[in-house]
Amino acid sequence: MPLIWMVLAAFKGQKEVFVGGLLPDTWVWENFVEAWKAAPFAQYLLNSTLISVATTASVLLTSALAAFAFARMTFPGKHALFILTLGTLMIPGDVLLIPNFITIKQFGWVNSYQALIVPFTASAFGIFLLRQAFLRTPVEFEEAAKIDGASTAQFLFRILLPVNAPAVSALGVLTFLASWNALVWPLVATNRDSYRTVQVGLASFSNLEGSNIPVVMAATVIVVLPVLIIYALAQKWFIESAAASGVKG
Image (cartoon, rainbow, N blue to C red; front, side):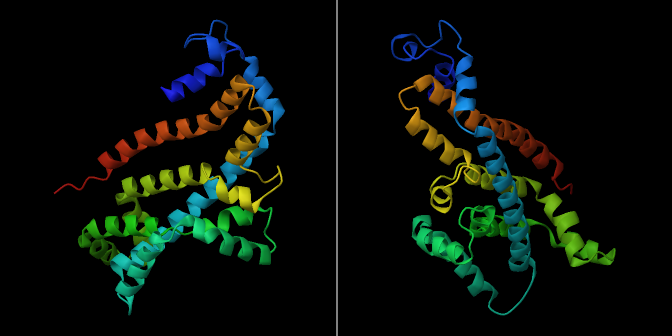
C-alpha cells in the first residue's frame, strides 16, 4: 500500500494529496517533468548504475574465487581464515565509516568513483553463500572435468558457477540492490553532483522540495523504478536457473 500510494501521489496535484481520494481526479504527468528538471537525476542514475554494476561484478568475482579456495582447496590455516572472514560479518558498517574515509582521503579518492566502489569489492557474506553452494556440488563434476583436461579456472567458470547459478544470481541481485540503495557512505565520500548517487540526490531533493509532495513522490518513483524492473527480471531468472541447474541421477 505505501508503494501504491507513492505512485498515485506522484500523479496528483499538490492540494489533492491531502484532501483527495486514493485515485487522482486529474493525472498530473508534469510532476515527473518538473522532478527530472529540478535535479540532475540523469547523472544520479548514471552514477548509481555504474557503481552498482562495478560493485556487483567485483563481489561476484572475489566471492567466487575465495569460496572456491575455501570449498575445494587445501592449504594451511584454511578453517581459521574462514572463521576470521565470517567474523567480519559481526562488525557494524557504521564502525568502518571513519577508517574507510581516512583511507580514501589518503589515496586522494574523495569525490571519485573509486571511493564508492573499491571499499565494497569483497563480501564476507558472498564468500559464505558461494562456499556453501560449492560444497553441495558433487565432487564427480570436478573429477570429470579434470579427466577431460579442464584447468581449475575452467572448472570454476564453466562448470561450478553455471551449476550454482541460483546462488550466484541471488548474490548478484542482493549486492546490486545494496549498492543502489546505499546512502550513508556515498553521502560521506562525495559532495559533488557529478559523483552523487540516486539516494543522496533524492535525499537532497526531498529537503529542497519537501513541501511539494507530488514532485517528491515523482522523483522517488524515478529512483525506485529501475530496482523494481531488475527485481521482476531477476525473479524470473531465479526460477529458470533453479530448473536448469537440477542434477539428473
